[in-house]
Amino acid sequence: MNSTDIKNAGLKVTTPRMRILQILQEGHLTAEEIYKELAAQGSEVGLATVYRVLTQFENAGLVIKHNFGDGRAVYELAKGEHHDHLVCIKCGKVEEFIDDVIEQRQAQIAKEKNFKMTDHSLHIIGFCASCS
Amino acid sequence: MNSTDIKNAGLKVTTPRMRILQILQEGHLTAEEIYKELAAQGSEVGLATVYRVLTQFENAGLVIKHNFGDGRAVYELAKGEHHDHLVCIKCGKVEEFIDDVIEQRQAQIAKEKNFKMTDHSLHIIGFCASCS
DNA sequence: TTGATTGCAAAGAATTTGCACTGGG
DNA sequence: CCCAGTGCAAATTCTTTGCAATCAA
Image (cartoon, rainbow over all chains, first blue to last red):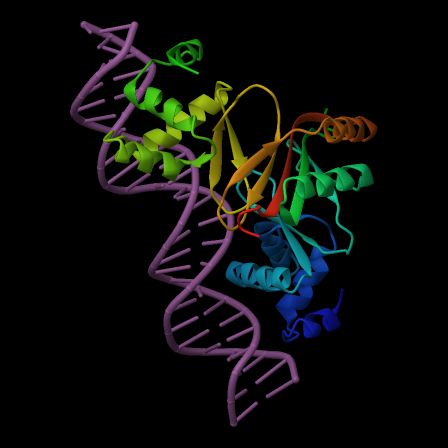
């Protein structure tokens, strides 16, 4: 996850893009959160730019965009392997998990329904250990 | 799914509410679609009312609201048993399915993570049999 | 140099809310 | 009769876009 990835995506390596990529290392963030983090770091990057860069990164396969149902999108780096999420409705924390049994069942169900799966998402919503 | 359910929810039985409940029998619909269907039926119900009624129905447990990731919410009647969805990104069709193996694994994962699950959703996105 | 990138402000899309009017019980 | 319910328009929230200035290659 560095300037090379940006170049490979056919994008110029700019300060906003580098910083956003770096901030995304922190985990699951909304555009607004990234924008504020940038401001906190002293980078005066516009919110529109954050959205544009995130969209470009998403199209390039560098980041994944999620809709956890609270109205705003959440972004995370595409770290390769697919995984699902546990989302805390109190503190907003997002935990990841992978379950091969579920993955297999999903593929099986899609197959049975003659459905060509391009994507899938599983969200477990509730209270995390700290917020119970 | 009739006027009794509306009453039990502590709501008055009005024409807009009855009609909306009836239209929801059709399946998975957006607020806009319900609004247009109402108009097509000759009921001049405002879009704001559609949203308000849907929210009330959701709070009353009569309907379930989904976010399939395309920006707008989709509503369906709460027919009791939990189920997951296959969503066609071409024609918009929504198929339902239930898989006990997946349900069990989810509960197990939440338990392992010491996570108090209040809700969960699994979406399989892709092309349905007709749109492949 | 020069087209890609950015910032800002304005535009959009989905949903919510304020308020005066209407209607169900 | 009386307050819940509704319509309409304005307000919100999140995200996208137009355009002139700016910057990476």
